Image (cartoon, rainbow, N blue to C red; front, side, top):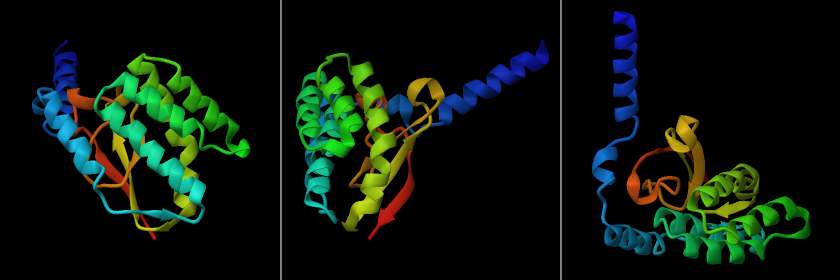
Length: 177
C-alpha cells in the first residue's frame, strides 16, 4: 500500500512538472493569446522549393494559430483554405483538412491537426529551401500520448491546449536550410 502511494505521488509530481508554468498558463487571458498570435504572424520568412508548399505552410500556420486561440470558427476557415492547396497526389491530406473545416468540435479539429502533422512532416522537411522551421512537441496532448506540430518560431504556443496550457511543450527539432 505504501509503495502504491509513493508511485501515485511520484506520477502526480511528474505530470505537474511536465510542462513549465502549466498552471500559470491556464490563466492566460484571451487578449494575451490574440497578441501572441499577431506576433507570430510577423516572423521571419521561410521558403520552399515549390510555391504550392509555401502556400500550404502559410495556411497551415493559420490553422495552428486558430487552434492556439481555441477558435473553432477560425480553424474551420483556415482549414478550408488549407484544403484548397493540396494537390491530387495529396488527397488524404486534403480530406483531413476538409474534415477539419466541416466540424466545429475543437477537440476533433485538434485530433485532425495531429494527423496533418504526421503526414505533412516529410513535405515540410524535404521542400524547405531557406529559413528555419521548428518541430515542437507537447507530452501531455491526447491523454499524455503526446503530439507534434510545426512552427516558424521557437517560442511554444500549444495548438493542442491553446489558452489552457499555452506554453506546454518543447522544441523537438530545428530544421534549417
